[in-house]
Length: 144
Image (tube, rainbow, N blue to C red):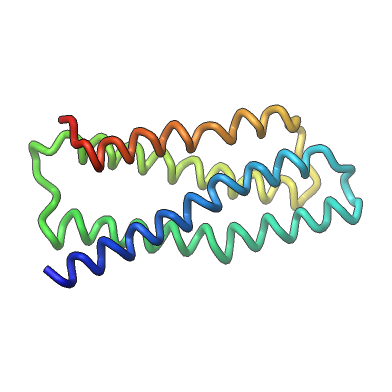
């Protein structure tokens, strides 16, 4: 039981760290989209975006996935009739796809090829909130 609680605690820590980046990176894009390409400010945003993605978000996502799968399969949480867990898993896949899209945006900004407005990134910043609401409700309430 002790190892289960440690894995669960580390999983939650990884998720919190991943979500911090998931919420912050699009906010950087909002400000970056308002700057002129090649400016000192734009170059600073490129560094911040790359470091956030590579040093915080990617490792956190990987750890969250590994520990989440360990909880599901090694500790026996995965059950065929646990509909809540299947839906949660799909929402986590959605969050991962969102993460990959943000990684693509980092590359677009790095190449000075962004064509989206700051308003687009403001709306994009709401996507993880909706996914997170579903994931947390499913994990805590287990309605199905």
